[in-house]
Structure formats: structure tokens, C-alpha cells
Length: 132
Image 1 (spheres, rainbow, N blue to C red):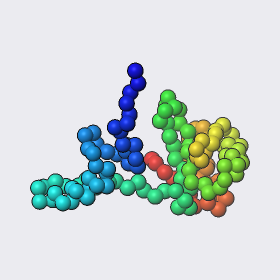
Image 2: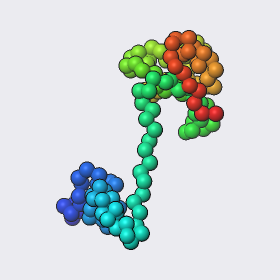
Image 3: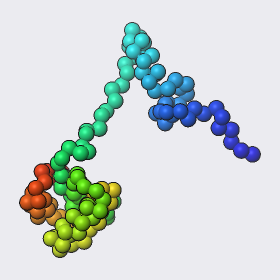
């Protein structure tokens, strides 16, 4: 016996609708503005900060999901994936540690922020030290 999924609306924004609502998200917000006399307010949507392609390389430290072992994260280097691997290789040699490239972010083992900020600045990047 199968499950009948014909009643479900799988159009754009299907995952943003609240349970029991038949209106798509945009229509709900438009109707909420009409109900202003009843004291119903539409919630403001939070916008994620635009960090991609801003020309700034961010160097930070991260321990989350690594059982307390810290790695230095380098994000925002504008290059293609093969160039990113080459830069990662050179930075790992400079630090004398291991590391990897995951999802366009270079991870270097240990807290190497000071050395990496200096090295990336010498290479001509605009560098910011992210985090604490």
C-alpha cells in the first residue's frame, strides 16, 4: 500500500510554508499587510551578509566538529579550484603542517593565523583576521 502524495504542493517555496497554510509564502505576507487593523504584523526576514566575492580574504580559527582540535580557516581567495589547491600546498609548506581544501575553503592544521595573515598580505591579498 503506497502513500498518496497528490495533495501536496511541491512548487517553489514549498518548504517555507507553515503547516495548515494553503497559501504560498508571498501570498501570506501580502495578506498579512491587509490584516494590519487586526494587530497582525508580518515578521521581518533576516538577510545573510553578502560575503562572497567581496575581495577580502578572511583568516580564522575553528574547532567545531573536530573534537577540540583547532584548524585555521582561510576563506575568500578568488581563484579556481586547482589554483586554490596550489595555494594551499604552498601555505602548508610555509607553516610546516598539514591541511586540506574543502568547499572552496583552505583548512590548515593548528593555529597558524599570524603567519598566514603575514604571508597572504605579502602575496598582495586584502586580509582580515576573522573571529577572536
